[in-house]
Image (tube, rainbow, N blue to C red; front, side):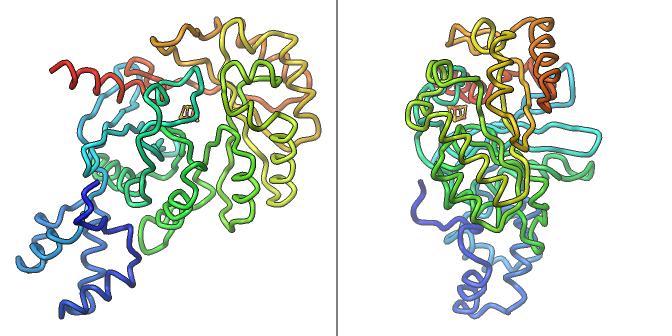
Length: 350
Ligand code: SF4
């Protein structure tokens, strides 16, 4: 990381204002700079600032912590995938989806991931480092700049590369930044945080006064199958994960979302539906069923439409609230981490 410069949104507004004051700048400059940076301006492009101030800011701060480096547009829907280049040269990816209610941005929380889920491309090279709050915030700013006058990101899902709760403090700082009414003012209820099931972090998160949606990647009806695809399942057994989910619902009054990637021949038979329904009995929750995005590097495939529908119908008949999530942007390296891996490979071959 470029250690000489501070990412602007990594220091609080008051600290930044204090810094400007120490440089004999007028009080209103702090807000002026913040508002321009939120619009995606680099310091050099902030023409309403005196040149000397622009230069001083450039020498000390990074305005845009995650500028877009490459854009891939889906040919089958309006999904766009971004590669962002960080100031240390690392590349991360994100996905912008357009729904009838507006834009949803899927952001990354780490460079890579160490959790090792076998169906995921993000983890193939491990975790390089945590993202800072400013780098997560920067992904939203850059997406808004890309959207331009067509709208703004209204919903955020922390489901890109990385395990959000493994980067706990920065994730919480990011949520507060993005929710700040003087910054992007995105409602917590429009934000979903995904975890592969870090039980202690779930208990910690329920104590925060942050009513975002908690999504738990379950992907299996029992420990045996979960352990085959998610190494974290060996650390926290399903019983303890379910206890944490129940405690979360009790504490917050909000339901939990379970993400369930259906994998052909692995986790979506009729018997699996019965087992899963039993696990979720009397738990205020919803299951998001997702046909697995095929990852070339792994020998796992999505089930046929008929099979996934049969699995969903069985769950419904057993009283489980479940919907099948539409896969978006499948023609542009659908699974998280795939696009970044491909880009890194191409750069290596150059
Ligand atoms: S699915 Fe999520 S937690 Fe699992 S390896 Fe991929 S990014 Fe990490």
